[in-house]
Image 1: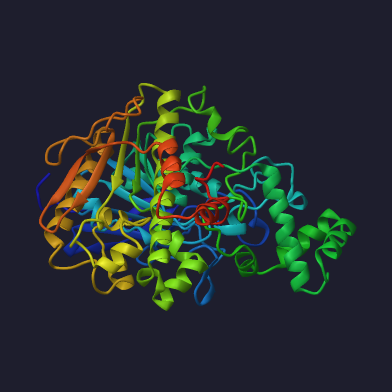
Image 2: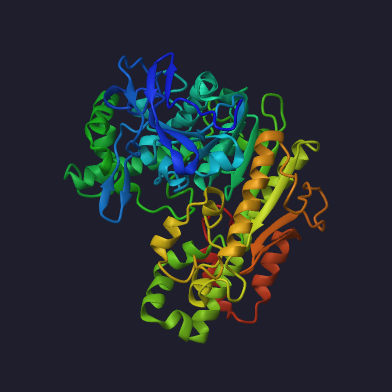
Amino acid sequence: MHENDTRNEIVTLPCGQLEGLRLTEARSIAWLGVPYAMPPVGGLRWKAPREVEPWGDRLSARDFRSSSVQMSPQGPVGSEDCLYLNIWRPDHAEDGLPVLVFLHGGGNVAGSGRDFQGWQLAPETNSIVVTVNYRLGAMGFFLHPALRTGDPLDDSGNYGLLDVIQALKWVHRNITYFGGDPANVTLAGQSAGARNALAASLSPLCKGLIHKLYVMSGGLTTADSKLGESKANEILSALLLEDGLASNPIEAEEWISNQTVEEISGFLHQQNAARFAEAIGDTGLRMNAFPHLFEDGTVIPIGGFANLGLPGHPCLPIVLGSTATEFSGFALGDSYFSNHMQSGLLESQAEEKNLYEAAVQYGSELYAAFNVEEVADKWKKASPDSPIFAYRFRWGLRDGVIDPSIRFQIGANHGADIPFYTGDFSGVMQNFPAGVVTERNEPGRKQLSDWMRCYLRGFLHMGDPNGEGPPPWNRWTADPLSPDILALDADEEQAVVQMDKKLLAHDILSGLMKDSRLTAEQRAWLRTYLFAGRFFWKE
């Protein structure tokens, strides 16, 4: 193969031809908006995804397709017709490339595959990058008895996760046509996408489809099916109240009890999908607010992650990541802190500043430990020989690297590591036009980004992030005092990467109870209000 050999952007699949997009400056080719299942509309709403049918004529795959229905600041957006994926590969003729399938975050109520774009990452890692749209909110996770058909997949309620599994099946069957290796697929994700990736790895339906995991800020979460049924009835009651079919919750219960299963199913199917998105709203890391990833016994085994390491539920090689101030955005999103920030009191009043700093510190430590230390320890216990690597992203916390006010408010927040992988900082610059992405911090920021992609490349190709260039990355051990976390940071001039200590939940909680910045009332408020019900809060 010559250095200037390229690949055709027109690909012929068993389902038909796709015409992609050559991104010459980025040295990559993209196929965007590729259907991997039939549109889940009409009679296929709340059904497991169905195989995509041949499309006949050449299909243009040059534009992103719609996300799943979700709420935005402007109101509902997206479409039920959302089961599309996006593919990027380097613009050369090499075959047998490793495959990275990435699942977007957004609490399983928001986001899309275009949130993580591979036009830079694919050539930098010499891999195929695939991102997936899947059903969100009540379109993706909904368990109501009136919808049961007797088919265990259709009745699971796990439609969003089944979409992910369907996308993985599509990749397994078709990725060779794009030059990918179906026997070397790494499933990755961030936040809810990371939690979905972990759940998919647990599912017996994924056998042979996933070979490694790259999990960014997502812990081990599942929900009891009974909780899902309760939430579905709660949503149904809210719709009845809105439509005037009931004037209070008791009347709504009476209406439900007086209808046949067919009538309830018909009512649910008649509703616009946007109404369900509005009914769920913001979930804020709370499973009770929006139960999903149900332990249905078919898609996800009963007992959830207690099955790790048992026959049929292998512990795959895994990279686990978190950010140093995971909770800052969620704390700032709380009305108490957001109101004080808008009034200017959050930074100017010592009492409010101390409370916010404590909320971010302890919430972030608990959330980061939930996402990394807890998963790594359970993975290690279930499969002592499975390769486990863990990192904590810290960029933005050093003095002088970013604007001090932004550092105080968000620091190295949830999702801050994503642009360092993709190389695309446009989203950061849109949210923070000044003070974060600067010419002054570019040398250190760029080297850190290069090193992170170098680690990822090693893991995709060899199952080990270590190689030439960045400092060594040690495997996770069972010793709680061993420095097994790779701290990813940079000053203005260069990357600063080294092994660091683990977070211990007992020490975090002890620090919270002894923190002299806080009054007893403030500690109680953090525990019983701000942290209560979050994934990471065990009390």
